[in-house]
Structures are given as C-alpha cells and as structure tokens.
Amino acid sequence: MSALTIADVERIAALAHLDLTADEKTRFARQLADILDYAQQLQRVNTEGVPATAHMHAAAGMERDDALQPSLSPQQAVANAPDAAVDAGLFRVPRVIGG
Image: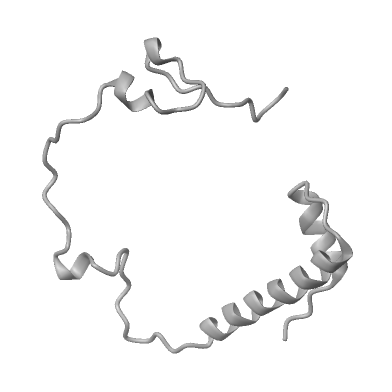
C-alpha cells in the first residue's frame, strides 16, 4: 500500500483551499492511497504490442460526418440561465479570480 500520511492530505487540502475535519483527513488519506495503489497496478500491466490509440472508438468507424446543423439563437440559449443578460444574449457568472 502507498504510504500517504495525514500531513500529505493536509498539504493537498491547503493547495485546494479546503478545510477538512480529522475524519475527512483520515478517510481521504486512505482513499488517495487506494487510488495510488491502483495506478501502480496499472503501471505493471504488460502493454507490449498493444497499439496506442487516441480514442477507443476511432478504429470502429463510430464517428459521424461533420454537418451544419441549426442552433439556438443567443436569446434562446440564455433564456433559462439564472441572472442572464437575455437582451444581450450573455450569461452572467460570478467572479472567480480577484475580488
């Protein structure tokens, strides 16, 4: 099992600006260790001779033709958006940087 300490979880939480309880820190340490263990298992899988692919369906011809389709007008697109500037056709979103 990967060695992941509470201090590691606290550092990660600080980077994400999260306040965690002691129980959450313990649970997340265990869960993150499990994720890292699984990633290590995947690293041990022999993939020699397996061709690299960008998408699992690319070889099966599952892609559709790119065709022009009608779309919503800007006013229709924002009609149900909370706090939208419908007349301008704009979405309003809360400020996330600076403040």
